[in-house]
Image 1: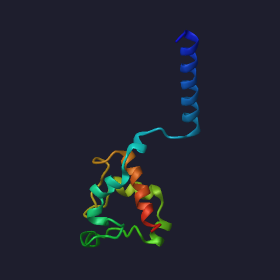
Image 2: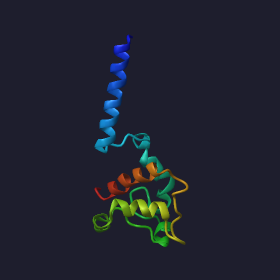
Image 3: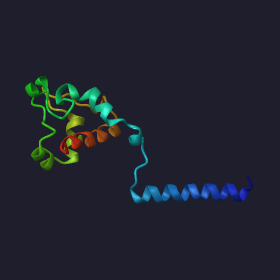
Length: 116
């Protein structure tokens, strides 16, 4: 490949990267995260496989993710904050256990229960 070809390739990469960066499109590992697997590993014990709390979850006050009213009044940011910080004596914080990308990916799983 000659210098012009290399320069064209590098220039194209810089332009695409800059356009993506400034457009707000996220290029992250989030697309590689299996959010359902993360949910099944860390959340289903209390929140159930279908967003309905298990007996343990009910005893701890776990949310009913399939509840349309709860879905409507709860923001994505509130879900992320809850997963990050937990609730003393009820839900452990996951900010040290999961990456922020994994936590953000869980929002789509939680939201999915409201559509069933």
